[in-house]
Image: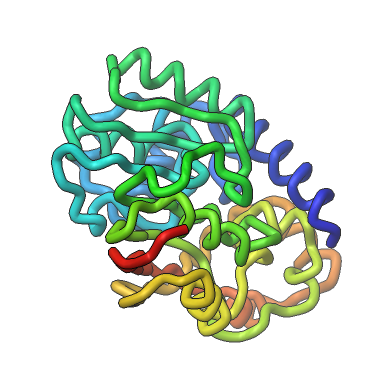
Length: 279
């Protein structure tokens, strides 16, 4: 799949999600949407207290972890969220770093940026700025942020090497990276790996775990650690109408479907930019 085609498809898909309030696990009836988003969010690590503390529209059930919970944020720090969506992680980070600090959210989908800004106004967050931009070319200055977080977004990028190079560039010396993302333990079956629809469903854009870690190392990060690793929920494949259609068309058995899901895991990865480094 060509990079530009992937990006445009991802942008279009997430624009629809922003407007329709549906998750990456497929479309649902409006009356079920809030419960589904909160249920998914709890499964991936958010507490009821965190979900109740933010605007209802900020929780879209799009993540695969809770990077803020593991980032050990300190009051006064500047935080950057790659692929900030409707703003959930930015709002949680803002509460931890305080009103005199700054949180920046970057997303390439105009509808998501609009939604996040609306949620920020509703929640009266004065220390958050949402910027339109691509995570491969961040609209952020060199050596300007203390912490980079991201939640199930880098797997969607066709140029992950560039994403981590950019994250390294914008971090201050001594700054740190804490991300949740989807990776593979083994290659996906052909029918998913080559489906652009499955790509936007958080699955086929993922790469082998070891390759993912090597890319982070190559960008310059040190002390890299996988903090946590959990299986990817099978329901995220089962509930995606596009993936279901592909499975039915190709007569993929339930056993083969489960085998594909077993290839996918969610990991939380930590890394540090050495305090001796300069971009």
